[in-house]
Length: 581
Image (cartoon, rainbow, N blue to C red; front, side, top):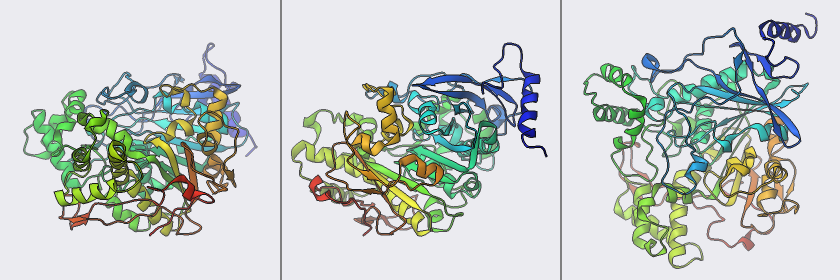
């Protein structure tokens, strides 16, 4: 075949479809995909330009009989589809009861017809294939959208000469209600899977390299990345993974099939679907208004929980052949580079979001009894002796006294149980399976803080005052930027490789040396695959208590304290290393 024949043929096809006022093939705003031609738009990014393709439908609208089902690929189109604005967000409840809620969960149009993806491509389109980075948003599988300003992919695409993509996926009961076979479950994960298939099949059309295909997510998005790592259906679709403050084995990230069935039936009762047979119940729920399902989802929980997520992924025997802990213990695909980590204050976000009824902003309300209440909310099935033991152990650590001491303990208990321990355990197990695993630890910031630094969207965060140059510096070298609150010039850490090149082109990531005292904000990274001892230390057992619906045998509250906790920064002069105990 004559070299360049296929690109030339593609251009001829596009020219035959374009109208006189359409964008031209030469300017890169029109691309021929497997679904049909799409037209994007140019966006300025500092002195650079990217081409954005927004609101691309990758699945048929999941409405009517398709509600609760696996997504179907969108039917091809023959006209040039305008892809210059985001599609509607998936149905979700509003979040308004904590400061800066509008920044993280802005109000936007919602619809059950929400399965769209977005792509940002450097302009001009690179002459050689470039890496692809796919962002999966978080939000507890209940809220969020790819169109949030803090997830804008243009800045990363321009700064690192990569293709950035993101997608919406169904949330709450519309995405994770499970009553098989009528509602098989994990519809939201199958949405993500279909979007990944579409992106991989169309990588070449946008100048992307499928051999360098990174999945990136935070919180529930990170757990989703972990589920794709564990799924035999999804793992072949990508080549690298980065999980920010989340893991598939986290206690909030999945429930058993029996729990899912119970919650689904409870939701049916709340909405007047009293059918005793599951197929009829699903049919009844398919006829209800989608916002009614979303609005009533929290009422299906039996306990008041700090991290009460009613509809989440399940081990369905299809997407997930077994439970996440068991899948992590078994070999699950060819080795690939995996990055994962957490922040120093993972729990502070949940104190604000999940424990607002305790009025902890008032210092006089922060004491021993409030600490016990926080532990009860965090681990609602634990007996009182376990709750007391955990609270006592954490409140005895650190140098703070009084109210600050208890507030620190609350933060660390929540963070360790929900985020740090699951991530640390996953890191260890993935390294044992032969995967090159790299870890990071981000100090001085709460949960959900990584995305603006990595995606380059600090200017979107409430109260931020960042120039494009400053944001770009933070994105290219997050550790260097975050070690100083206002300046990026002081090199506190020497790198053998930068953050993104490892994850995209294979250059080593995160091997840091010459680390001095930990500052107020600093990201510390280390490799875990060269030496299995270089990973977070934690003890996995503190107090045992009886079996619960999640576990078939007596278990314990994971007690996970990394070496840095309760230590002064001076102890970390020289080199920061994680160690497994």
